[in-house]
Image 1 (cartoon, rainbow, N blue to C red):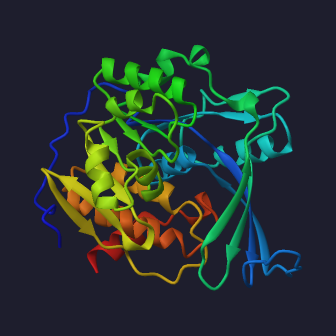
Image 2 (tube, rainbow, N blue to C red):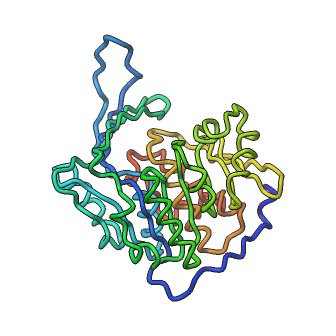
Length: 314
């Protein structure tokens, strides 16, 4: 156990809101290609299997929270092509509000081809996103955002994310950020964030530090909120009151790491709404992210709540 098991955040959630979580960010369709080994240049490799699954950082985290019983609204865009129709139909299976999900005429929905190395479960993502899907802040409506208690972002459409975060803060909402790329002006978004848990790649790029511990300290200077870093199978590192804690990862037989970070974030946010300690929230999120690696796909890998609960209790 870490020293965070007795740390409770005591969050004061705004009252009288129809939604607990509002997610604004990416959804995608993933073609997951299972390979017996990663291909070399100028070679042919027979695939072991191919799966079509719904994904996307915020869409996956939002879906997990909705499946676990939170009241969730998801805000995003899909194209009006075949990929977009599949993405929309897949999202409609989730028990969350999609009234603010927009279909963009003439756009190709975001998609990815994900090469999974069967022996390790590690993946390489080949992706594309039509510029027509970019959320302009002028297209965002305030009422879509401010009806929740917490806003979850990925920061890909940065101006829109900043605008949404400003509106959220104005009405007492908390802001969570799962960010993986450094863009000019990102500091403004970080400053608006209450829960910042990027991957080690973002921390390294933002801080120019190879040591994740030094990088985490540098990142903490950009925000007054909670700061941690996901480290894959190594678990998560946390900076709390100038001390760094390490929450070990949960060991599983991994077949596909796609969406593990998205599932982690959703599970962490779910834990916040249960008023668990910081340590318990992170162990729960680690377990959920790890179990997702035993299944194929991002939303396809969301584990049942009972399974994650039992993993944490064991």
